[in-house]
Amino acid sequence: MFKRKKQQKARLTVIDECAHVDGAAPDRVAAQSRRSRTLAVARRRIGMGAVAFCLAFAFLGVRLGIVSLSPAAAGVGAVAARGDDPGRRELVDRNGVLLAVNLPMRSLEIAGREVWSAHETAAAVASVFPNVDAGELETKLAAGRYVEIQERLTPAQEEAVFALGLTGVRFAPRTRRFYPQGPVAAHVIGHTEPGKGGVMGLERVLDERRGKGPLVASIDVRAQQILEQELAASLEKFHATAALGAVMDVETGEVIALASLPDFDPNEPGAAPADFRRNRAVYDRYELGSAFKLLTAAAALETGVATENSTYDARGSYKIADKVIRDFHGENRILTLSEVLQHSSNIGAARMAADLGADRQKAALRDFGMLEALPIELAERRAPELPWQWGPVETATISYGHGISVTPLHLLAAVASVVNGGVYHAPTFLRAEGDPKGKRILSDETSLIMRRIMRRVIADGTASLAEAPGYYAIGKTATAEKPSRGGYNPNARMATFVGAFPGYAPRYAILITLDEPQAVAGTWGYATAGWNAAPTFAAVAKRLAPLLGVMPVDEETAIAAFEIGTTPSMRRASLSPQVGGGAP
Image (cartoon, rainbow, N blue to C red; front, side, top):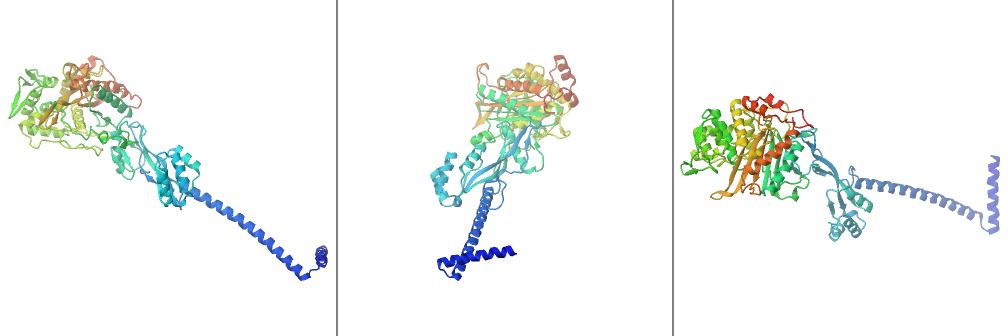
């Protein structure tokens, strides 16, 4: 205490001395001292306030940066996610291969009211996005408008924009539907549009089938690629305008592969003409020609109006009312039921249908699913086009596939039931769970007879080029003139082959159709199905068989199977353990 008082006294002495020297009054000196102390305190407070202001400004700047740049940010400047549905399920093939998936992405948007310089911002953005008109963008930003620059940015574009350090920039969250297989199975998968959901294919199914986990399609990507490759090769080789095909499991109705060419990439559907996006296999209706003779013969056998050895006069022509029916390359003789199919006789089929009658013909076609739209998952399904009256002439022409228009998938499903023991399974594009229950429409005996006849079509008839060694394929050719004004155009044909393998124990049915194929070197001037669709079928079957675990057999084993018939369990036994996860 004593020391502190002594120090205070010393300071007062100094002040008194200074006052004495300067000649100033003591009260004035005291006032100056108080002002000095006040200024010092003020300076300290201003400094502390400046620091606090800088820290607050920095925090606010960081926060605004987060809001404008972060896709997950909330609050001022946040933009709600747009684009494809972020909750949409994945789509996979039957083996788990990814077909469709959501990818998180971001779009670039600029708030005109927040930019420092509309001119500099527009120029900088145009340097990253060459398609942006800098002048037009500057005008919009100067007017304070909110501008979306690009909806889906690549990582490189995002990085480039970040490096610009622009104000008013926002990276808004988006979801993009991505198809990793590109155009493979495009017509089955379909595609989406932002704000609309699925617009075709299985993507439309996903609009209704919400839930967790992927939706499992029936198709096998490997089989799909084989089918598409062989169709593309034939499309080019035979100068066809279009090609389509499908592969179906005859025991379940599962569509293992389905293709329609030309096709498109679902990642960029708008880049292809609208015609390329049309699924010809399930939407287009055709008069598919002589393949209908299989259904006519099966119905005749099943109803008892014919046997395998029934005969039909195929000499000359056959006239019904004002309709004259002729054969393309007629045998001009009496034919057995089997020979009617082997030589594809229109006359024989028409006479067979006359014995069957219109009512039984319609009933059979109804059982084969030919009178209404298929109950498939794809929205592109279409009902057959039926004759407005069904008299004797219509009964005759329908027997060989004229006068009735159906989709190719209609025909494939019907023929699958002919060869699988007589059970109709509606086609499905989703993997079957459990043991699918079909509807029996033919007896095992009728199915066995039909398999034997269909084998003769390849071994001794119009489809020798459909042979697949070791698998003893069965099937039927069909070449139909396309309808035109006032009749049919003999120079525009649909060439189809529909069959199954292995023929001795059918497991997979295949349909191939070429639209307006042309005669080429090696076809001897012919453009009929036996010369183009049949070899395409063989190429597909030979590549699919080992992939799907179908084992070849020797001739003795095959002949025995054709004689005694097979049951579903015997057909399944023809498969080896699944190779690489093939279609079970």
